[in-house]
Figure 1 (cartoon, rainbow, N blue to C red):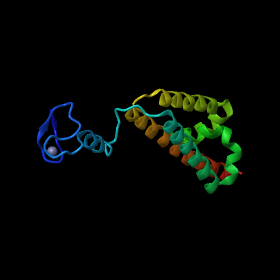
Figure 2 (spheres, protein in one colour; figure 1 turned 90 degrees about the vertical axis):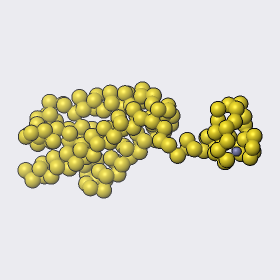
Figure 3 (tube, protein in one colour; figure 1 turned 90 degrees about the horizontal axis):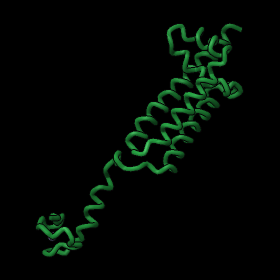
Length: 153
Ligand SMILES: [Zn+2]
């Protein structure tokens, strides 16, 4: 049974319009679900790309605004995450020397792969929040490291 949104009377499942008032039943059902967040529905790959590239675009923009010269050390970007560990600044400098930033890029690559493999938009959203939080911590860590480094010289 379908309940008419217009007058509340019951109609057959096959009915396109209400038998009493003539309201379109299908159209009403669709418009009702449009406002919901569709966490169970597949996430289009184009939307994933838009969010992913947008996040990296913000990283690049934030870096250029805060300290344009830090774009020169962009290959070492993941090192910024190490700053948040205990004695992080020493670990970051050691990590930079032993090439731990390569592992950082592999980690970001894996996270990206999982994000793009996630079918449900809800799963993608959770992964994107983790990814975005890491990026913000990473930018902040890099700036902290750059300040420390410039203090040494
Ligand atoms: Zn009706």
